[in-house]
Image 1 (cartoon, one colour):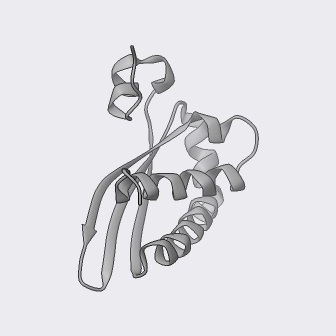
Image 2 (image 1 turned 45 degrees about the vertical axis):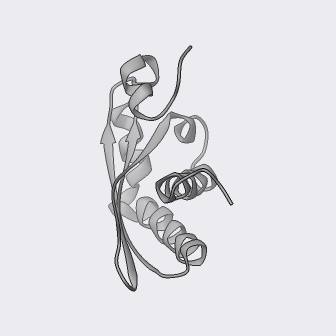
Length: 115
């Protein structure tokens, strides 16, 4: 039992794969947003965006010929299929949100709360 929704677990699975597959500060400069989560009879269709703070990080996340992003996506998809108990069609996108960690409105959009 949990009070978290499926989108939260999807984001956390993707975040875990990024932490495991990338070095240095890059994993700590990303945020995941699930743009679409469609639960069909035998399939979950998920579109997610990986936001990075700088252009150089986008290239690192994607990797040469997209291989690094594909690896993250494949590993995340397999974990999601096990977690949700059905096939998953996962599409990942990478976008730059300049210095998102320094902008309060962006942090709020990503679910961070301030007092």
